[in-house]
Figure 1 (cartoon, rainbow, N blue to C red):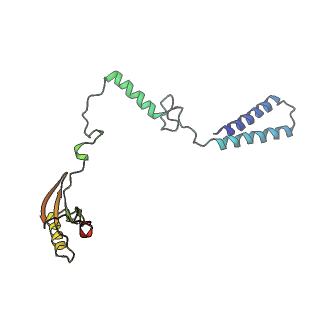
Figure 2: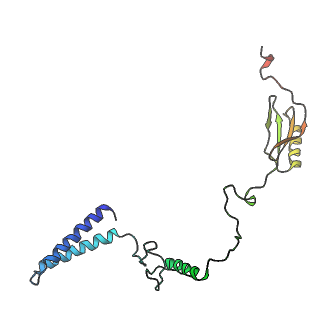
Length: 189
């Protein structure tokens, strides 16, 4: 209920209080109809302001929680907690039971981390540096077949190499001889 609704409801209830104080045995029917209209107005304001369901328990912590008729506040959740506390008084603390599931850690446990992946990267020499040609492969034989097909192509590069990637890079094999080529014609004269 917002502030404006609270203010309007308070005003309507105060007006009803004034009507109640003014009632006598000889109050005319017109005045009673006015009281009835004001009472309906207050009820309508109350219906508009209440958005949640009526509480099922008297518990301030769980007003719409499950009901336990035997509990003083009708709250099953709080009564279960109180019963467990009373049981612990008589029986002592619960026996230690080891955890069966892993505990959440900041960095995760070994089983949560992905396994390292190995890939074979086909690269070609472009005259200045090694660059990736084609997509990285999961199979070494497939990567070598790809490089063999690239070497037979009409516009083959000067050199190719296969790089093994597995947490680090290792050059496995080089085809051809990489020679640095000046990109400016006539030697940059």
